[in-house]
Image (cartoon, rainbow, N blue to C red; front, side, top):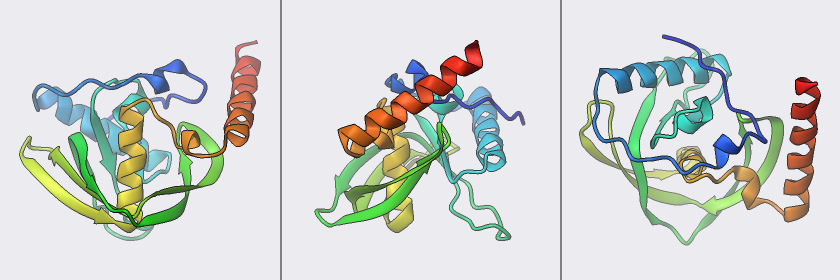
Length: 171
C-alpha cells in the first residue's frame, strides 16, 4: 500500500467531474488500499479518488474512532437516490482544504446506491455522520467542495488564503 499525495485547494483537479468505473479489478483494489492508507495517514474519515488525483467515481470512508477496530467502507460509483426533507448541520472539514472547518447544512438522511469492493450492487440508508460524509465525498466526485455550501464571502476568503499559500510554495 502506498500513501498518495493529497490534492490541495486551489488545484483545479478538485473541480473535475469524476468518470464512472467500468470494472472492479486488481488495479482498483490497489487504489482502494492506497486510498484507505492515505486517509488513515492524514488522518481523515473520508476520501474521494479525485483527492489523490484519480478522476474516478470511488470513495472510502471509515467512521471508527481512535482505538476502535477500523471499519473501512468502499463506495464505487455511488449515487444518491433519495434524501430526506429533514436537514442537519455538521461542522465539516476536508483533507484537501486543511485546517479549515465550517458548518454545512445538508439533508439529514440519504439513500445511496453503489458497488462494494467486490463489485456487488449495494444500497445504504444513512443518517448522522455517515449521511454527511457520503454527501461530502460524493460532492467531490461532482467537482463540488464543502466550501461551495457556505456563504460566498467566506468561500472567497478561503480560496484566496489557499491560493496565496500555493503561490508562496511555488516561489
